[in-house]
Length: 66
Image (cartoon, rainbow, N blue to C red; front, side, top):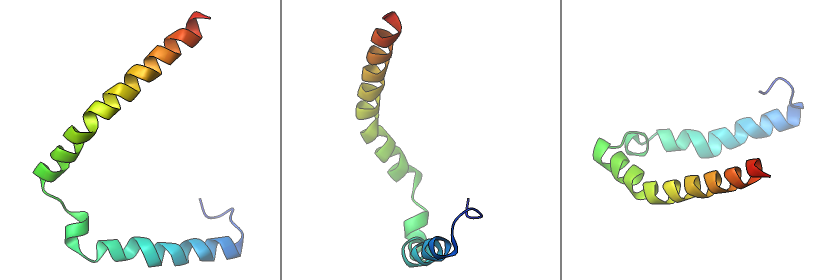
């Protein structure tokens, strides 16, 4: 939400968006990736994600058992 920001913070947000976000979309290779690349990233992240879920569930089970 930007309607509750002071003017100087809103202007800074617009400046940062224009400086760092918009340029990333000028090159289609930064936006569109092949399905194989996306799937490779997902597969690479899966073990760490599954371990984090195991830890979360283990901790949550301990807290609810108290």
